[in-house]
Amino acid sequence: MTTIKDIAKAAGVSVTTVSRALNGYSDVSEKTRKKIIDIAKQLNYSPNTLARSLVMNKSKTIGLLVSGMTRSAVKDNFTFEVMTGVNDYIAKTDYDVILFNTNSTKQREKTYSQLCRERRVDGVILQGIKTDDPYLTEVVESDIPCVLIDIPIQSDRVGYVTTDNVYGAKKAVQHLLELGHRNIAMMNGHDYAFVSKQRLQGFYEAMEEANVPIRKEWVVNGDFSEEMAEARAYELFTNEPNITAIFCASDLMALGVMKALKQLHLRVPDDVSVVGYDDILLASYVSPALTTVAQNKFQMGYEAASMLIDMLEGNEAKVVTLRTQLVVRESTAEVKKG
Image 1 (cartoon, rainbow, N blue to C red):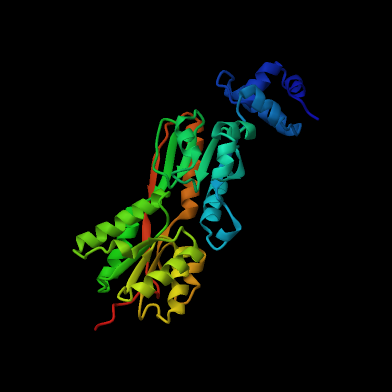
Image 2 (image 1 turned 45 degrees about the horizontal axis):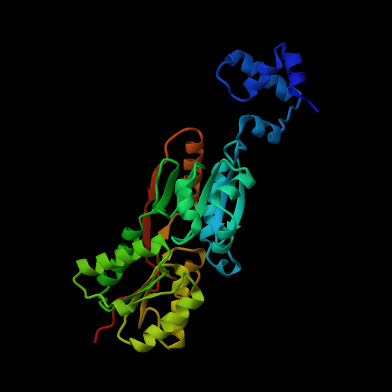
């Protein structure tokens, strides 16, 4: 196997010069660097990544830490698309990415810093972290560069990527209002998600600006779960038959709501209009096709990876807010008169 000694001998320079040239130090002339790189290619030189990482104190590896990734979320392709975006950007760099899953129980057994050091990652992208997760406090205090997805917290070493959740929710509810609906409910996620709070704010703003009374008992939590949303919707529409439309903080919950409405012999959109959020793959395949708020999940992952690499190369942490788009399909219609 070719070593840097072999390259040094062929190039007529010292081992130190070869090492500094291959590791990008600026004190090696461009002419010498090019010569060394060309010889390294000719000799099929492959650097010992582990040894190099120990010398440079960098692993050239980032972690994608996903909280609560379970089989039950298979219908929701949100995490997969984020991961695809991360991978797509990282593939263009000389970094590698590793995936590790966690949950609240694991986080109490091992600190964030321990996890990162055990995996030897230079930085981390966090997806799916709840506001009550122990890691959230640690992330801000840690010296390990980090990018959060959908969690608006920033510090010198922490940046985040999100979409305009308030605006997206507001547009969804305004769409229902424009169709003549006034008895509008909301299926929110849970109290430990930043996006739940922001989408609820958008719901409130749209209703208040239209001078439409808000019935707080019509705002219920479905825990971002299809099954939970189905159960909560069944109870809600059984007790409140005057509701003509519902905004759901996720498409997965919207699917659960539509199941409940079917059980109650309520037709979508003839009797009840339904709007989701996320534009998951299934949204365009269900019948009727789901009106929803689309967010570019792939781009969120791509921007998160780009931001993290930027930070690892000495640049400041940033904030990126991506646009959302209302996608009108078949699950919403004008309110029935009378």
